[in-house]
Length: 288
Image (cartoon, rainbow, N blue to C red; front, side, top):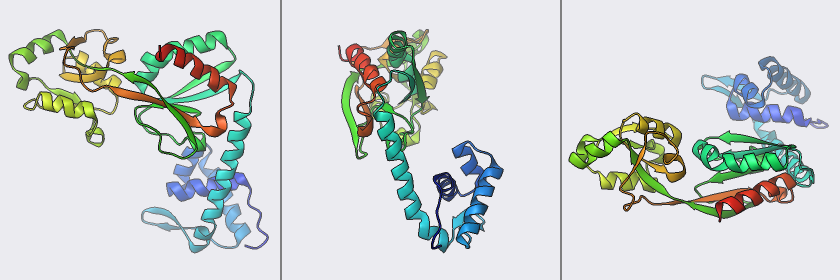
């Protein structure tokens, strides 16, 4: 492999295949066609003179030759992302896409008015919401900025606690009446097993130890809709629960644990003007 010059476009495809285990998964991840992935891997194989992958019952795995260049390919990827972050972070333009990661309920009920004000003042900025509970990799530019309920543990992330979100216990009026008569007859709407450690889940189960688990979802918005359909009780962020028709706040004097909202972005983007103006508006609205 001496004298081999690998292009970044081919390295990206090589890494996507190594991580996904197939040409199809790589094509979906990179948003290119399946034949394109196959052609570029064939070119790399021809250039190196050795196969980089071998087929197994579980998909494609690296050969010794492929494994020997994996670390180098990952270093090239890190360098490429660093260049992209630095160039983007140095932009003084109040135009372009701003990629924002947040839970669906937070985006809809907390960020929406902030982003509406942002585009009214700076119409050249296009916010792009990536809604979901998955924690994205800010170093890879999966998003420019992220809002979430846990602090960031990744290196090189600038973060701060933005606000404290209050939570409440919600149900329909009929559900509330049933709770007063027989709490064991009411179902609980909670996070799925992977998020069962959340403090609001523990609080709800402690409060109604005899109640059955009626519905689980990682989406607070789905929980709220099921709650409004009368499926049971749910602990919801107040910003969401207060906004859903048909829900009533139950026993406001006995509130579930609140959660801190953290905002973070990679330090290379700290001078990005469109990010800074959005954070200025968010801070003015949410920390007041």
